[in-house]
Image: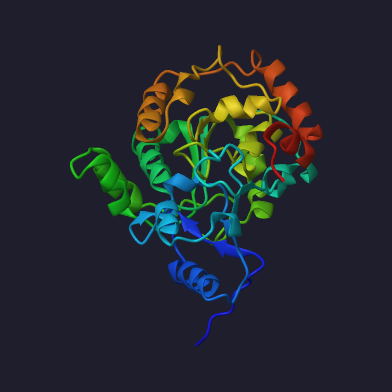
Length: 317
């Protein structure tokens, strides 16, 4: 059976840091080598840093370089707004603003009556989400309003990071017996961004949102609906994302909560960021009245922000 390829826009699908459709990549390169197509335009799913992506067990970029192809004929496009362009000279930052801005058309009334200190609303699996959701479920369940939509667990990926003897694995085992945890959803199906704002009413019940963005390692920045929801709903947030995520968010005109929340965690990524956040959970709290100026400012910025704002600040398309 011959697979159909769109040679105008070659889409590479990435899960965590692994290319899922390896055959597609290999076949595309083969056809380019044989002159069947004049150039390659790879579109990387969402915004992972190119240097982090693996293909057949090695760096995708190094593998591509080994093919001895003219780099000017190979465009690589993704939503990473801060990609190091020295990694690939023909890189195109193309930001899909729709997930982040979709909430501008969402009708929501702020009526904060918190019943929980934290909210943690998880759709798709990533090992950091499993790590932190397991910790919150086992240690802070009464103060955390939680959803965890997927049953899928990749324990091996987590063990590769923390080791086989880390206590978190016993928390993961306990947590796995209770998922999926659904809020206002009939099933654990995939949640697209245009459906992800349906949970906004839950934000009236929480004081701080624990945001787990899609990409979290390397030099990357790609804000999604996960960050937009607390901004829209007037909710302070702590973000698990890549290093300098909050710094890049401020470049767009938003304010964050340093002074009310210790945001020194933004200087770290990966497991270190998770460990700092675990410690923060034990002591962090916030007076919503003291945060009102920041929350109102962010809502005003969110109402007015557009694709042009990203183009002007980050030079994307």
